Image (cartoon, one colour):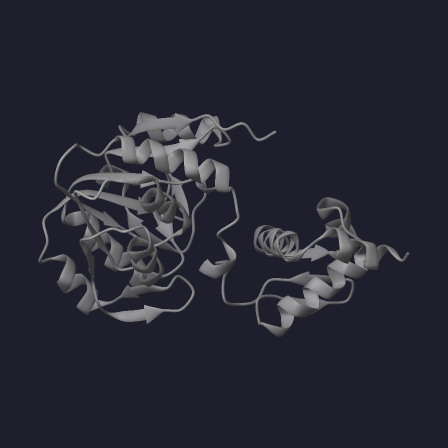
Amino acid sequence: MAQSTRDDLDNPSGKRSERMVALLAAVAEHGEVVLSELAVELGASTATIRRDVAVLAEQGLLVRTHGGARRTNHGDELPVKLRDGRNRRAKQAIAQAAVDQLPHGRHAVALTGGTTTTEVLRAMGERHDLTIITNSVSLAIEAAACGQLRVLIAGGILRANSLELVGSLTESTFKQFNVGTAIVGSDGVSLEGGLTTHDHVEAGTNHTMIERAQRVICVADGTKIGRVTLAKLADLTDIDLLITDSTADPAALARIRRSGVEVQVVHVDHQ
């Protein structure tokens, strides 16, 4: 049996999705990659990786090159629908730690969009005494599925990559609420850049959410620590607690701690 056919049999749709996300992440990190090297890294044949690259190129998520692939000129942000499976165990542990920080009784919680904040919502479980405020369409749908009874969505312009509503209308909605705790995702957390994301408008909108909160918790898996992306969402001084996992760069965490931010590290078994 040909290796490419065997790969297809051994990799059902879920496995293929994970492989394609890993492929996109490699392209985003390195700018340009070689198919033969990717095949070794991802445990698939070069023919299988070539087919994956063709599919992703058709969707405009990368550019095919001779013997490889490179990222597009649209930045390195993965669409939210492709991010869900990345570092899931770490995000679940971070989410549980964040929920443990919430006080008992009625409380207003603001959530930005993102896969880690979605795990926070799922970890709330039977906490139906909470009011959820968000500008994320996908998170609001998830909240309804989880049986949350009080969900407020801040309206605005839909940003396709993140499925978040952004802009002045969203910001004016946030300004009407007093938030007990804001739980904020980020694409990068560092001493140099603070909290950063991929879009300036989204950054401004989510900063307004932060300004309305009595307490701010940033949830970010270890891959985000020490990273700086395009747009500043907040200064480190704007957050009260950073929750991350044990894969985070210790030196970057030490610099963040020295800035005065409380840091909680959850330990995740990656075996």
